[in-house]
Length: 121
Image 1 (spheres, rainbow, N blue to C red):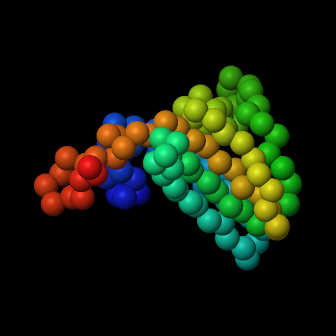
Image 2: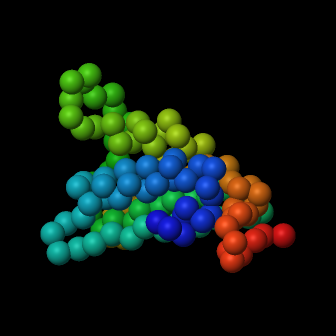
């Protein structure tokens, strides 16, 4: 997560929240006992976007961003992802699925101002 913080200090909390929500959903809903999941973050410089993906190995499908009851303790993860993301969706994987989200991320957002850090041109 420190790497994400150095990538995009302006939107770091949004990225961390999305990673947390997608990872929690993968763990709770998409991973059979004895299996794991993968998180992938990629920056598409040409497209100016950061993509967050969780790859799980379970069956089932994502049912969209449901609207939970006001007093429910859970069920808001994908609502948060959809509210903060420029786009999100679900892709196929064998076994399992990939749940992803993206947001706009220009090269300027990735320029780190810390001394000793790598600076993008």
